[in-house]
Length: 128
Image (cartoon, rainbow, N blue to C red):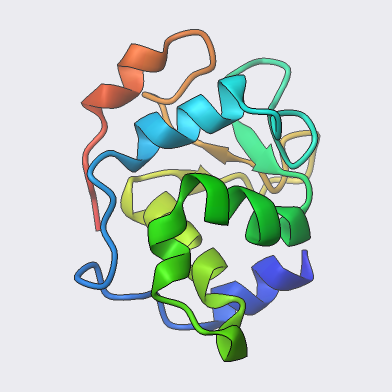
């Protein structure tokens, strides 16, 4: 949570720095079929939202493995930059953070991003 709070304070990276062609499809794959699913990030039980469980492992393991473009532009002096780029993409692709107190708080959702229909997220577009 500290990394997430710190990254929200940083200015978002401009889209010209790193822009993944279809971030939602890759994210869906990581959430659904990677060894990190359920350990570092997870789908919520209802399958309509997801969350990061461990920001430290997200930064150290998942981002370099699945989103290396985010890490290539970062320096060791600014270890949070890869997380910032990830969160920029989350927002730019229209995901909304659930801020209402409850079981889903801190998760992210999008009406076209659901666990049981990977093809649906291909309809998502950059919004920001």
